[in-house]
Image (cartoon, rainbow, N blue to C red):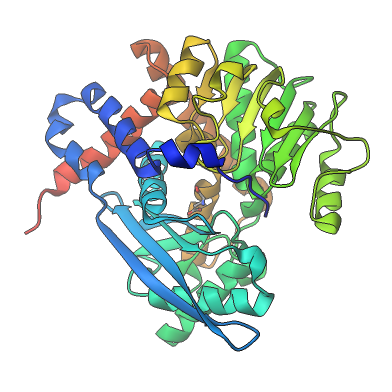
Length: 427
Ligand code: GLU
């Protein structure tokens, strides 16, 4: 999976994803019911964080060490839940933030999970398949005390996929002496995975975009769409937009930015990327600079790559009507303010990309009952959960005159802190 890098000018000044999460909590705290104020501090303190050493033997015989993490941000509403990211820039701060966003996200769509996240600081493109398997297995073994089907359930995230989940499930199962399919979600369908899981995040992005468009009079049919990121989330979002009559004008990934004013052929572009490992040069496309991507006039902009991609350096130039956050944390708080001033509506990550974890929840339920649903059942339940969550957030934003992100945080944080308060303090 290809993902654009955080520009170097950002890393110098970037306050870091965990501090962005803290700022978001700060902003929402006064908006919560006063009875919850004594518990807000809970959100500022991840429940537990583990740093592990992941040594692997490279194909040339040399042993190399990588750093891995697993963070449980909050488990008040249920077991930890959240993906595993393999990326050369992964840090503990990033994993803490991603775990925090999972806490809010799971509460926003009201699935019975807390928030967790994991990652390994590695560039998986530099590993052979057997090295990747070794890394996955050793990492799983190192975090095995943290995970379990009723404790914490990992899933795919950036640069991890169904095969990585199969290795994780197998490694955990070997330790337990029995097959435990429910320890991870996003598995292959042949191993207890759910139909519809691989497209679920992209489908959820589309559903929330469509709902926002309905209310703002921006129909999907004929809409101009630009997408940053062409991995699991970006590719599925772009494809589903196109299937529903939108025109996907531009796509950016690590290789660069391609455009076609008449609309890109998303399926052909994916096939081209698989074959050539780059988007550049694909038939029927022109290349523009990564910087110019942001200024393309469009109806929907879908950031589906890394954090902090929409920031104070480009927010003024964004010419979208609606931003739908396929990625986690793609918009900095500063950029949020700029976009709001310019009348650009942001459908926040904790809602827009929650389709993935929602179908992960379906997978977990199916594994427990060993009874599997049809794709139609999955999609109609996903559709219902996503549109109900969207409705509740839209309504609150309208009633209390706040941005959608604040409304989503009010709903999510309230659910988490109500559970926290009623459970009380141990011992
Ligand atoms: N990694 C995805 C996310 O950020 C999915 C997590 C899950 O399914 O547990 O929401």
